[in-house]
Image (cartoon, rainbow, N blue to C red; front, side, top):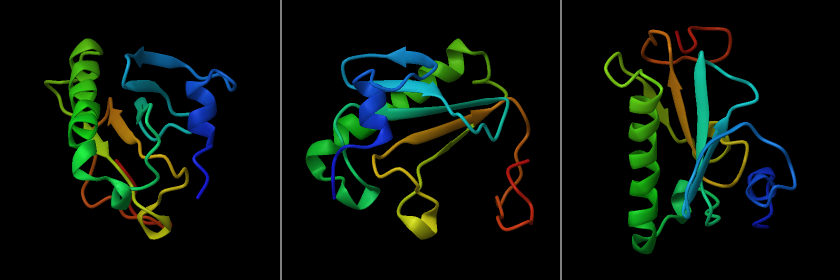
Length: 123
């Protein structure tokens, strides 16, 4: 599987994105198809295709993505009200870009479970 994705192009600044956070390990930007008032994607700068490809050596990097999520929650003022962090894996899990990424969704109350296919969706 190629490591070049739309996300690697965003990291390389070949494709524009509404970037809200960046450090040496990660990049966070607004989702182009938001499912909540606040919806950002947090990606590692190291390409890892799926959750299945995460190795013990990636533990610190993957943990860092969650640290960034918590930082953004506090910075944007929704840490206390709550938010959802989701990482999809492969086709049946809803993954469309094969470069792991956290979805951080906030700004409205969300239901559980988040059904698909014309049923209840993130509320």
